Amino acid sequence: MTQVAASILAADFGRLAEEVRAADRAGADLIHVDVMDGRFVPEISFGTPVIRAVRAATRKPVEAHLMIAEPERHLDSFARAGADRVLVQVEAASTTHLHATLLQARALGLEAGVVLDPATPPEAAEWVLPLCGVVLVMTVNPGAGGRTFLPEVLPKIGRLCAMGAALGHCPRIAVDGGISLANTGAAIAAGAEILVTGTAVFHAADYAAAIAALRGGSDRA
Image (cartoon, rainbow, N blue to C red; front, side, top):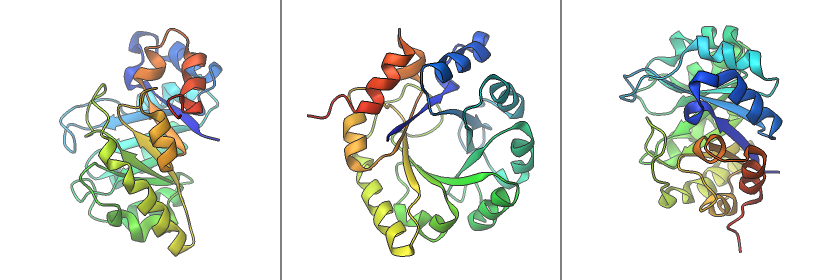
C-alpha cells in the first residue's frame, strides 16, 4: 500500500506537537522532517531539538531528510534525538563518502536512505542501493516548500527499480516536492511507494480525507 509521509515543513510551528498528533491520527504513515543547514541548500530549518519534539508527539516512524553538508558529523545526534530513518543526499556537496556515511547510520541503528535532486542521475545511487531502505526522488529542487512538481523526473523511478533488481535489493521509492492530488496518481503509476507531502496534508481542511485521497492516487483514470 502507498504510504504518506507528512512533512512538518508546512505545519503550524506554533502548534507543532498538536499538528504532528493530528497527522498521526489522520493516518499518516510517518513524519518527515526537512533538516537544512544553510550550506547544502540556502535555507536553515530544523535540528535535533525539533526531532526530539516530533518524537515525543508520535509513535509513527520519524525520518530526517538531511539537506546538510557533512551529515556524518551529526548522525549520532539524530539517532539520540529519536529519528528512525535518515535520508542522505547523494551529491558530493553533501558528503564525499556516501557509502561510509550510510554504513555509519546503520551502525547507529538508523534505517538509511538516499536522496537524488532533480538533476542527479539515478546511477549516482547505484552502488549504495544495497545499504538503503528508501530512495527519495526529489520532484522539486530542494530547499523550500510550495514549489512546483517536476513530472520529468518520474522516469528515474523505473531506472532505480531496475538497478535495484539487478543488485538483488529493491529499496522503496519515495517522491517529495509539490505532491498533490493533481499528480499523486502519476507518481504512484511511475512506481512511487511513499509520498512525502506537507502542504497537501497540513493545509487541508480535513487531514484524514487528504491523506486517504493522496494514498488512493485520486487522479488515476
